[in-house]
Image 1 (cartoon, rainbow, N blue to C red):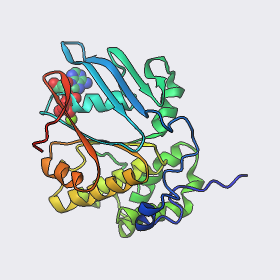
Image 2 (image 1 turned 60 degrees about the vertical axis):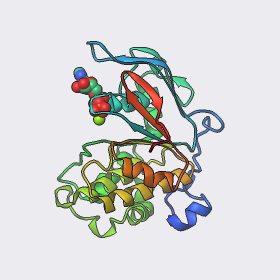
Image 3 (image 1 turned 90 degrees about the vertical axis):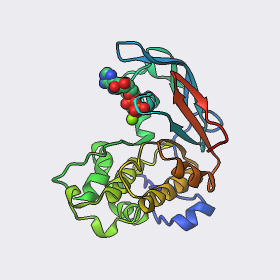
Image 4 (image 1 turned 120 degrees about the vertical axis):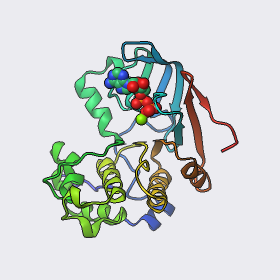
Length: 259
Ligand SMILES: Nc1ncnc2c1ncn2[C@@H]1O[C@H](COP(=O)(O)OP(=O)(O)O)[C@@H](O)[C@H]1O
Ligand SMILES: [Mg+2]
């Protein structure tokens, strides 16, 4: 059987930032030079009025975007459109060049393997140790054998080596968020989507999580983060070229330079 070099093999963030050797070398093709996720003239409604309309968004490989906007504006909904959880009411969403509406379940599942999602309320299976929770996407995909050496590297990267055997309820908020990020990237996705990942954690932990997101971006991943946290955005802008989008009044706008 061909040996698959998992992107986390020999993972050392400091090295990877300079030489993205392990991470970001996705064997799948089709993203280079094109957009990973594109929304064109998209509207969405849960059945009542339209939450937003005429929405356009292009996530290029390696780009970093923040999504801000008041609570209830539709940030989470927009993220769900971006990872194929919801289908646009009108307009077109393209995931890796393919129309999400035209995809069957397998197509969506394939696209989802290339998108790592950190949900707002990161849920874990409380009876399974942290390490098994993080490896769950691999076991679901029948690729658990790949986890062997690499899971340890990944847990070290998010600073959770010592917590590997702990159960999720024993973890702090910041530890849960980092565990959720580790789980989101274990399939080596091309895109990371995080929904208010620092919503419930303190500033130090927020910065730590941001550092991880920035490292992933430097490895070539596209990153999209919904957040209310203006300090987080400012801190990020000192480290990466991040675009800030604001969802407000049913429209998506580029946020001003006042940030
Ligand atoms: N499953 C749903 N069914 C009906 N309405 C929903 C559903 N999910 C969210 N909404 C409504 O859509 C609006 C936008 O929600 P959401 O995308 O979660 O906004 P945000 O993440 O910006 O706070 C809110 O008014 C919310 O109540
Ligand atoms: Mg939300």
